[in-house]
Length: 118
Figure 1: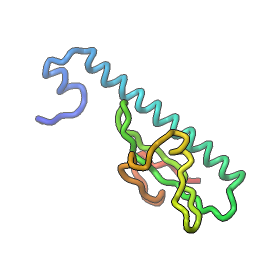
Figure 2 (figure 1 turned 180 degrees about the vertical axis):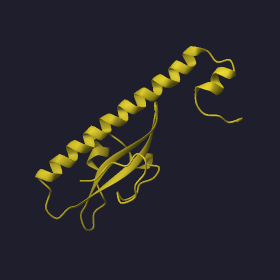
Figure 3 (figure 1 turned 90 degrees about the vertical axis):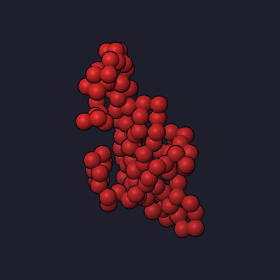
Figure 4 (figure 1 turned 60 degrees about the vertical axis):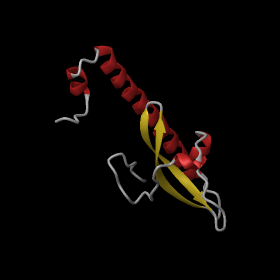
């Protein structure tokens, strides 16, 4: 294949071993950041199970973010009240701007990185 993905094509083109190690390290950092976001989502879910604000509809949504370590898929809860824009407390906690989202969809759509819903 001409457009291979992974370490082999890099090594065939004469890249140094440290370049491959760098790519692997970046992927590990991306996975760690994604895992941290998963923990924050689960904490938010547990808090909601104990105390859900009255008059608020809460739905889980995913979001794709570009970071210096690569693209992440994170899950967060959207809080909506009639006549108000939906708030995403986890986005606020992570200081994400709305325009960083590539795609967002209801949690009924499952992907390989979909978080199971309780």
